[in-house]
Figure (cartoon, rainbow, N blue to C red):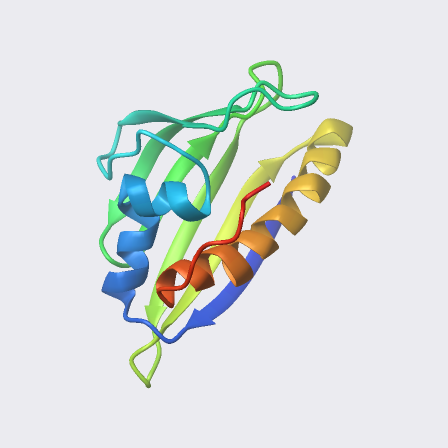
Length: 144
């Protein structure tokens, strides 16, 4: 099994970062349009519409909600592939900011290794550029 692990520190409170992860409009601004709700068992989709070689939909289910500390959901980008899990952990920093840790786990086999490679760079850009811009109140650059 393989995973993506990224950590980023933001100069914003855990409550503010939590809102960017759990408010459907804010989440859609930096990640993908969605029908997310922070309730365990809620099934939702990220949906950017059909893309070259991909249907543009990620099916998910909320697995854990502990505001504003931890959020986990399943991630199924292709119904024919094994699903993975996305875990967000928020830790306050001494200066009032937040250390955000992303763990995207469960990549298996050759297909999982390829998916991990594709998603790893995307997650890095989304956290360091798109989410950072949203939190700083700046225009969020195009996702694609």
